[in-house]
Length: 504
Image (cartoon, rainbow, N blue to C red):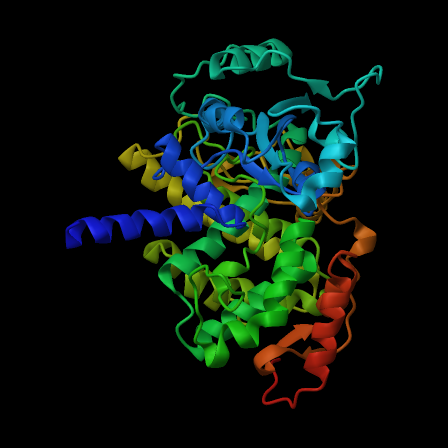
């Protein structure tokens, strides 16, 4: 046998040994190679006993499909390409019809998932279930169970038949050859007061996208940018609407000294936990890539910028008086250091520098964010009008329009609008506060008012000798029972540190 043949045989033998190991990752590689999809990332979300409830609890999708399978099952391997054809329509950043159906799968051959599969009386592989995502959370299924909202998919042997089954349940007409639409499902009526409640997921999306931009550009490059990043993460840990984003921010704070010693961060995902890439700020279990309230009528309009503004408004209405200056500085520094549009960043920085007196009242900060947003809109109105680059269904306007808040206007003259600031403040507090979270209180995706405890005491020393308002530290501790102990540990560690400098 020639040397070349020996090398080839050795390579193939090592591949077989690796593929036959107990690692589920190795099996995934083998499945991908055998199915010819090595370069195509799976769209179906892999669930297990640890993340099953949280993913299905937090998804914005109206329906879910859960496939129970076994990695050793030949029929399951053959079925996977069919399932993935359907999953690509609904899951991930390139979803054709996002936010409608969450396509998931559970490997029952993994011992850790045995109890989960037993709860759903899995009798054969693959076995598919359909239902509202919330019904799967802490749920179960039995063959003789009556009036269950969880249904067995009894006709999904091929991609075509599975999609037909979904079409019947949703009264839709999806096709496997559907292409990504030019955002036909936009929320075009901005005067509909209830539409803002859809923006909870957009805030998560914008937060995750902002974090990803920092990772991609390796943007934490100095002690200044490190300090800016930490202040913003502290603000999110205390006051972000999303429980999972608060949890992710708190975990970054706890581990920051190890992730970014002396402000020098490691970014890429790795097998360990010593890089920022291993700490996705809003979690990695739920597919992202679709905006809802912030969806433009064209794919290159609205989206991230809209979501970022909604995030800033929602943060502003949740802080207390003693936190207003800290929040102002955190947001200004974050935009100045990490927003990658130079012109936008410079305009925003100019608005920040124009503030000469520190904020003492939360009301003043809420109105500053609002007035800054209107200044940006006013400038963009002219640019988009002259260049025809605006979104035809979402032309820039001064906010709020009269249809939403007639009492906000003292004057009807559009050329020189006079605002009733008390009414504007009242509107903003309600619109970006209770109204924004109204439809999701039952799902507990966001925190209730009682969960966010703020105070006006002095500031306390935080990691790398930075500071956080005591209200933010308390909010971190109570914002979620899932990470309360972790946050408490973080606070204890920081109290034991010797302060190096303070911030006013």
